[in-house]
Amino acid sequence: LGVTVLPPGSTVGILGGGQLGRMLSLAAARLGLKCHILAPEPDSPAFQVAAANTVADYRDEAALARFASAVDAVTYEFENVLVEAVTFLEALKPVRPGSKALRIAQDRLLEKRLARDLGARTADFVAVSTRAELDQCTEQIGLPAILKTCRFGYDGKGQASIRSAADADEAYAAMKGQAAILESFVSFEMEVSVVAARGHDGSFAAYEVVENEHRNHILHRSRVPARLSSKVCAEAIAIARRIADALDYAGVFAVEYFCADGQLFVNEIAPRVHNSGHWTLDGCLVSQFEQHMRALAGWPLGSTERHSDVEMINLLGDDVDGWRGLAAEPNTAVHFYGKAEARPGRKMGHVNRLTPRQT
Ligand SMILES: Nc1ncnc2c1ncn2[C@@H]1O[C@H](COP(=O)(O)OP(=O)(O)O)[C@@H](O)[C@H]1O
Ligand SMILES: [Mg+2]
Picture (cartoon, rainbow, N blue to C red):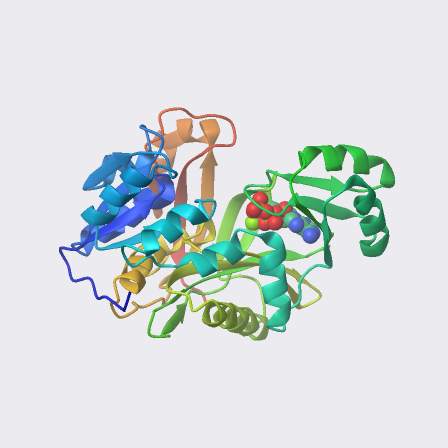
């Protein structure tokens, strides 16, 4: 299916109904694009703000076919969406980003191999499929190391650190028989990410490099500008561009890096808008959400220029109970995701604190 340009008035289908789908829908609405969300959970946060919703399982082909006939193009808001659903839809409507990017980004082995093939550095890694293999691999990689399921991990789920040989049994058990990857532990000084967009005509626009701080493996804070040299920032953006070109990517994506001794290590590729890009909602003329819509609708990419210094803080679980105080803070934009239940660690919203741009 060729390149389609979706004018205002078109309908974009989104697989997934979480906060990313919600913020995509809000941005799309401002461009005159309607969103139709398909998600299995009836209380999906995105349903509250979309033009149309379908509650269906991603394996329900009849529902997928009806969804396809109701939309002009399809995107997805989380990378664990079933590849089968995406390939099914690809036969019916343009899907951006396509299944190739999704397949690679879903698998930690494939994404690290891609980064290596493109000349980027990663932590040392090796595939692990049996308990006996794990012992050989820890010897090869050295300790400490981190064992991760190749697929379906997020926010540190499906990961176990191995500090000494005594941790290996428990770590292996935590993989629950799934294919895994053992990575050397990178003692980084900083985690950074690049959020960028590629148009299907090959156009490219990156936001400034973001500095990220995780707590319990969940993003806590992002800040721009990152406290990193302009040379390393330029390198991070150049690597991200090579990755997007190699995937023939269309849409917004993120590349997460570790930074140690001025060297960048690619950690993860996310084929979607990303938590570390939420600052763009208030720090840029065109947010990552609008940019994704522009890219997938075949519009010109928008300005990624940053007008302020921004600190983004995630609100997890009952952090959101402080909503009134946050709303009273000067120079702070509040974003709540409309989730009914504030379970511990659940992403309930975020705030962007703005200060005048210093550099
Ligand atoms: N090889 C590693 N060395 C050091 N820290 C790591 C390594 N892998 C993961 N981490 C830490 O755990 C966090 C989450 O891991 P990540 O691979 O990004 O998985 P996900 O975000 O899908 O849960 C990272 O942001 C980083 O803080
Ligand atoms: Mg990550």
